[in-house]
Image (cartoon, rainbow, N blue to C red; front, side, top):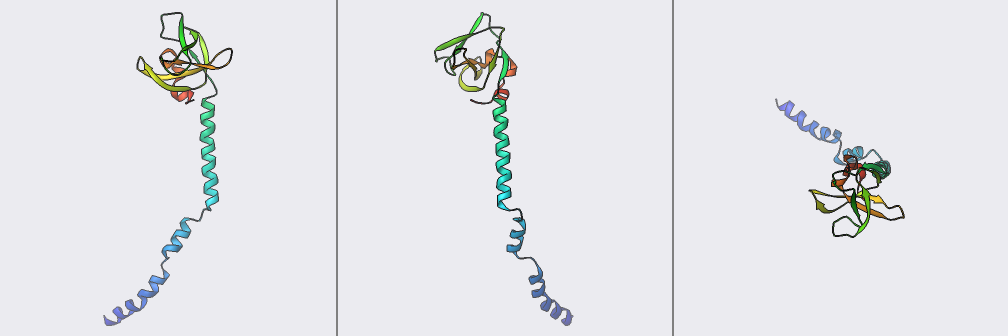
Amino acid sequence: MKFQATLVAALLPLVALAAPAAENALEFAQAIPVKEVQAETEAVRRSASLEELSKRSSVSCKIINSSSAQVNCRSGPGTSYSIAGYVATGSTYTFKCYKSGSCYENNCTWDQVPLEGGGVCYVNGYYTSSACSAAALGKC
């Protein structure tokens, strides 16, 4: 029994030396060069940016939910903005993106549509078909 205790006492320092040090474990965990990780992260970020840009390309939506022949298209995302033009009920327009603004009929998104002579105006999302969802358009 005394021999076993002596043997364990003699081998214990050798076992400790054979175990990997914390520094070596850290070096092993960082085997992938930082530049590769940064490049991969940048690629993922660019991909996400391209996805956002593709959402903004253009979405065709029909003007709905109005009993009048036309709906106001405002100079900004809210009813306090001036009327910049009109969109015809039942017609389809190309929308680019949306902005958050004052709420109308529990809808607080305002979809951006280009004006014929240049510039843009905003139609409350209540008046655009479901194709013009926030997810489909993306924020301006």
